[in-house]
Every structure is written in structure tokens, then in C-alpha cells.
Length: 212
Image (tube, rainbow, N blue to C red; front, side):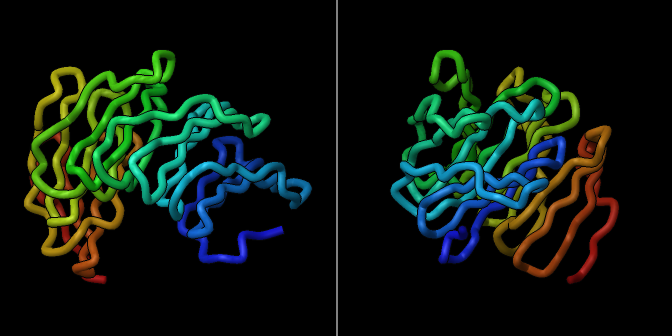
């Protein structure tokens, strides 16, 4: 079985035994990588899938699509746990913190929302980047989060205080990917300007730049 449409999102479980794919057909499919079979099909989104996030323990999946809601699913049986509403435009990315289990979502409305999954409500809103957020990622300890935007800027946030820690003048085009290293002290960002930048996440210093 397959989507039959372009695949737009892909994620692996931490144990490497399962994979999840999302497509422009608005569906998410769960795969067993040992038996090479489809486990379940998740339906409910109103648009093409933009991102899939998996909790570190593998129990929970979050999905974002070309709509304003985030769907949260049980990874064992594919049942819908909750639907999170808070963004005013399409949700471009979703990610769990490996350290804390916190779920964050990035919106074309320019906001990053941090969610309380038990209550199904917004716990904190990170506001002020000034452009649609395209990609997000947590630092190693879960206390920081980086957000990349459509205007090429990158902000490193202090989550507890809800304020900017660093604003990186990063790229001349939308940020397409970003990732912290294992200890959270280095941040790599990539853009459709064909550049990859490596930063000191604490000081905001540009350490290196690579042309694609």
C-alpha cells in the first residue's frame, strides 16, 4: 500500500522499528519496518501534510498540514487523541522535545505555540519573529527552541521566559531546515538561498557558512 501522491513528510520512531509518512493526499501512514507492512492510516486533516513529530518514547505522533489545527495520535493503535487549535494560519512544523516531551508547533501566522497535551491547550506562545515560521527545533535540554522563518531569520528562544535569546541574521531566503547538535551548543540552519550556516547557539556567533 502507498499514498499514490507526493510524500511531503517522513519521520522515524526512536527505536527505528517504525516509520510514518505524510502526503499531499492529507493522510499519514504508519509502517512496520521489520515486516515491511502498513500498520495504519491516519485520516482527518483537511490539506496536504506538512510535518510529522514523534515523541521520544514513541507513544505519540503529532501531525501538521495545510490547515490551522495540529492532530495528536496514539502511535500504538492510530487512534486520534486530541485536536489542538490555536494557530491562525497553516501549521508548517511540529516537534517534540526529547528532554521534556513538550510539543511545539510552527505557524504561517508567525507564532510558535507550546502545548499542554493533558489539557489540550496552548501553554505558551512565542511571538515576535515577524514572518511565517517554517521550521523549529528544540535544544538538548528542552529549555531553548530555534525557529526559522520565511524571511530567512532565525530566533533562538528561552522557553521558560518566552523571550528571544538570540536573533540570527541568517539567510536571504526561507529557512528550510535547522538542527541543534547533541549538546545544544551548535545550531545548523539551511535555506533555499543554497547556504548552510553553523552558529554558536549561546552567543549567536556565525562559525561557518557553506554554499550548496
